Image 1 (cartoon, each protein chain N blue to C red):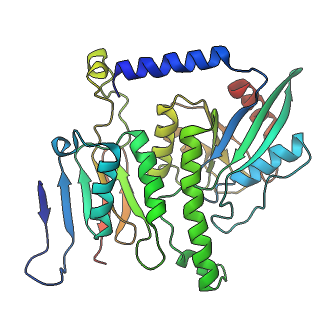
Image 2 (cartoon, each protein chain N blue to C red; image 1 turned 45 degrees about the horizontal axis):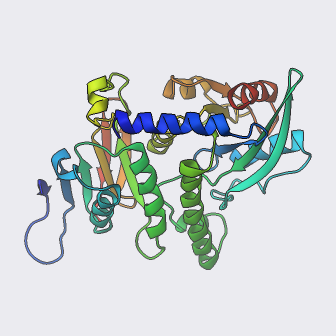
Image 3 (cartoon, rainbow over the protein chains, first blue to last red; image 1 turned 30 degrees about the vertical axis):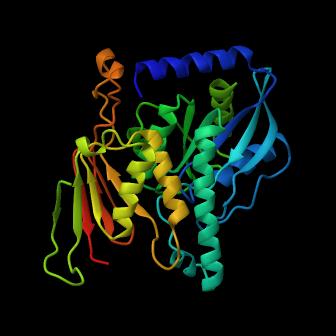
Length: 214
Length: 132
């Protein structure tokens, strides 16, 4: 895409923002690789501000196989209220092998079905990213190497669409969490540490959500 | 096509074919043509090396199309590796006017069950390629 196309897109975005209904909540996609804790975070945010959960959590990869939206989550910070829709998305990957589910005590038929649903979920997540989200919370498991191709590609896709992105280094409750490694992988973005499971550092997470997406 | 192959002889190939695809060959193709070219080769068990990588939008579509083609009896997806975008890449006004987006990054794509990334950093990608 050349400069003219960029200019056209920029004009379209400005025009859209001028006529946008400010009362319309922004859709914030929670993205990241499988098992990073995306649903745990979505549930934490939803429970803290609405009392409801978004979806089931599991240590088995691809537990979330459909994008799920929690609408009108009102987050109060410093006397102001920020209203967003949270979109919990399936973990993004470039490969799904049903045999990985056999290690989790599944029969082959169930594993094949789960892998098929997982592939549909990843495709759906990519579609949401291209078409339907206004900002991204990118969740990484801080105990894993963040320097993977999927992470690099997704951050590149998010940046190319000029979407605001907040990177969260999750699972800080685990001994081998390495927040600095996450920061080093994406130095162009701010990295916020947290444990979605334990609720550690959620105040800073909410401050940043309000600042980035409010 | 500029390509090298490590296989030889007739009959079932016992090597791994590597297709080195030049920027020139990819220029002028639509996003879907590029993705089709890549996935057709990878689904045959070949390794594709792109002299210039894909745009972020094309990468997004590559993931989406790959997911739609995974099946339990054969194709389990792709492994893809490329160098991270250099912060000093071409973002000049002239470059942008000419449509030269910052996509010039060597990219390796192969079947997920045949290629395994061993090491990756800003300057080196080391991968193990096995026969099917």
